[in-house]
Image (cartoon, rainbow, N blue to C red; front, side, top):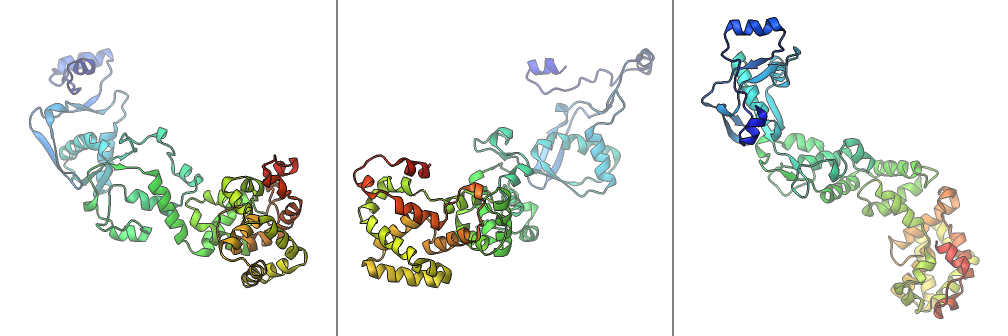
Length: 403
């Protein structure tokens, strides 16, 4: 019957072959052991209407349905019959589910009426769609809550984002706590149209929730992550707290913190010096600044400034700039390149003090390959500045460090 209906491009409707059979015909089949099902007898004319809380009035012509099975030939009742009885006996007031269930709702509504059960409120939510407006599926990426958690998403960010797929409180606000969602949610503001799952928007929202966490909670969360993946030997302490505060603006996912810390701890000096932008810093008499910096390190002035913290660093930089008659970019850019090996990054003073703490207290796992400030100054002593001026190939030792 299905194949014939398909060929005629009609809905697959059971023809009701046995609906009007005589008792004798039925008994003959039963005597033969012919398998049988129980079907719900659907009126051949008329229509059925329900008031959907999201879609308004929804109606179906009954002649498109046909008598449907409510108990299979193996004696097992089917879903639509079971769920109707189950929901009614549990006094379910609202049935909220995907729009794909609309065909089931037609069958269930008929069963409710036939059994004399009060009808619950129905609300059919639109599907979440992929960017190409197709149905969201495994091929579009992560498909389970567990996978999103492993990718670094927070539970509260996922709930916030999913709540906004097809709903809003009528304002421009997009950031909600779970308590606010419970307070503000109403089924009347759910949209009929399908919502697009935007992973970029989800990532942004996760970053907002991440940065709204109390400092202690954020530090604990990321500190445990750093220790678990083998960057740090400790998951808590002053270094972790300060590093998280320094880097949090670059972190949208918990997993982003891995690369953020790795970048902070790295020392790609040779790669920077051989880059086009690095060449302009070299031309600002960088070897001269390096020589003075090494002298300050060797005589203990710089280490003393590190020990005093932020105020000590600032006082030393001011004095160092005066001695070289440099200030602003001509002072800070060379210092950043020589101390961090990079042209850009977060606040240089905070970065240097963190590097000092990491090296002094051995907080970075030895297998990570972190270069301490002492090791960086040792490298600076061995730099052949002339090789950069002549555009000669780097020394083998320099290449090894860069890699």
